[in-house]
Image (cartoon, rainbow, N blue to C red):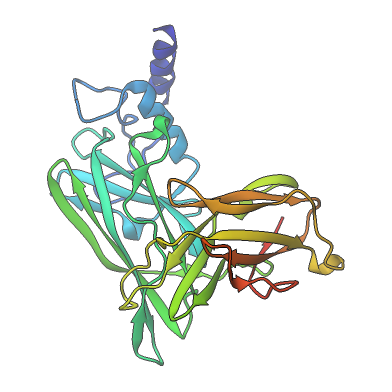
Length: 313
């Protein structure tokens, strides 16, 4: 009880001194931290949960063009780590609030994530790998939902991206329709998305958040997505089961490797996880060998495989 009261007091002190990321026009207004003053609102968080969500949202940045109002009653806000997108894996976070009091809402659905690139010279469109329906990812942040999109190309004169999604908040439905977005190229020394073919099928290997890595052992997470037909349909997770063997090398240091790496295997949530050991800072080229469920090599496999991710730490 004392802990909750302390949290309530800490939140109350912030009222008037801080501003929420939400208002009717997606600007800034001074309001109470959502959920702190609940007033019997059964749809929102406790004071403790609300403060945890509020603190989490200080670590991400809003994407105004992907935020919307549903039925004139609810704000829905989209966030990423930087407020921008880049080639390869990007997490997108969502929060819904009540317009009348700013309270966070736990029960809402985000799905139908639809990225689409228009290739100007070819006059054709294609999609890219997506993570599907947004889900709560942490018991402390039940009002924050997350999904991801992995962009196969950056925005350029050759092509431009749009992104849309569907939202349902407490029985009211809304959407963002094909909104223009910009996808930046990754800096030199970073390549987080690669593809390979098995027969007539194309698969994509999306590496998750390598900027969080440090020297030494790191959990390495990736997703395997399968290109859809037609190509304008978002690419969902591949149903097939693979094993992804890794061989990290430093091309600027004579291609020396590192010990104690563990191949990526499929997890219950559809991701692939393993261990990569990076013994020093610099550019690491992580050469990949992909095996099917029977152990057959279906991609990569040669020494210094031409299928690789580049990560600079």
